[in-house]
Length: 455
Ligand code: ADP
Ligand code: ASP
Ligand code: MG
Image 1 (cartoon, rainbow, N blue to C red):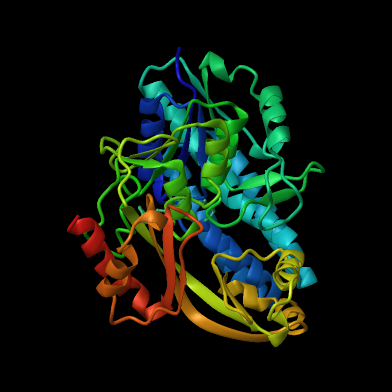
Image 2: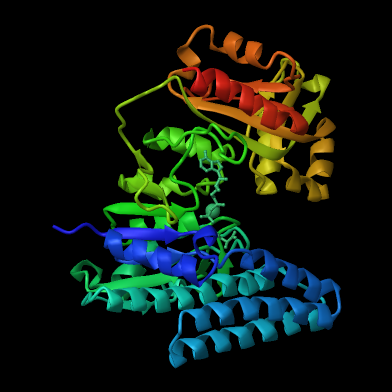
């Protein structure tokens, strides 16, 4: 029986008409039934800057950005020789962009909700273009399939946490059944948007930056896909970010658990939540390059053949270390509960944690500090010390917490770098520690040399 494949193409695969056509060729070659696309490269950033300028600057500045976005998309549409109906769809979306920006400008208020509505236009416009390219490729290849553009907001239902909405998976599955009942007849390639969804009431939401990977995984779960493919600008998941270390090597196969750690601890190639639906439904995930579809790429699966001690490493920048100290913690109970309750009330997630008798240190994304109320609430129960400009370096592999001598080897390798905090023990797949931001890249390069290049 034919496999049901969901393929996602990121912004890097959506740069211009040539990239989009190349991506559509990949989708054709792979026999994809559903294609999930990101905004064209740079557009989400432009839309964010449009929202901010509409709130704070002149309308003339907004018009400049609107024109830039429109020109980019009009050029791609012209290069693809788009049909009149698709061009009309694009122009209608541009009108919506203009009205939304005008509304924000008049009110001088760009709420998260308004920002989501604005940002959704990135994926909504790019998907119109991809559907044109997909139809073109299907026709040129003499396929009897057709390309159909669908509005993902009809199926990808989320809660109302605008800016970082959570998909409602049971609803997504039932909406997929209702809207895509014949997907397994393999007659149609459904083209749709990543990153966005809508509440049950129909308000547009987004899943957080880089969220198209997650959208594709949620949809793969919703349609009970056999394979999820993530097509990007690198030929798979590498032993570390190739931009950081030229000797990074593609990984042929990695387990769900290791890849989840890698994504959570900073490997941008996958949005951190991407593997959750894949793990729930045991859907193998392929990561490959749309620029070089022949390259081997990476398979992420539940079971893998090799279990190296260190398979890969990642860096998570823009970290702050918040240390809470109080003598009242000595021999007392409930202190951690109070701390976590405050973080929970503020919906802030902690990445790493370490405790001593009278203090607790946690690492957070630095954007958290914008939340002044969080820090003042924490100050009510302890002295709070905040250290900024830190990076969390993680080594990902297997049996890490049961391997003697590993800590020694790691810290010998980077003995000239001060390590501010260490986290080991909770996971057999991860050893992470905090260093000053400026030491992050060199720590990765040295560790990569020691544990990957010399291994
Ligand atoms: P897309 O637009 O396709 O979603 P992203 O820019 O979000 O692409 O992710 C791809 C980028 O992730 C790569 O260009 C690479 O620099 C970065 N990256 C970080 N860590 C890794 C890793 N371990 N393996 C591969 N790429 C990585
Ligand atoms: N377009 C969105 C972003 O730039 C989502 C994505 O590309 O995954 O964050
Ligand atoms: Mg991405």
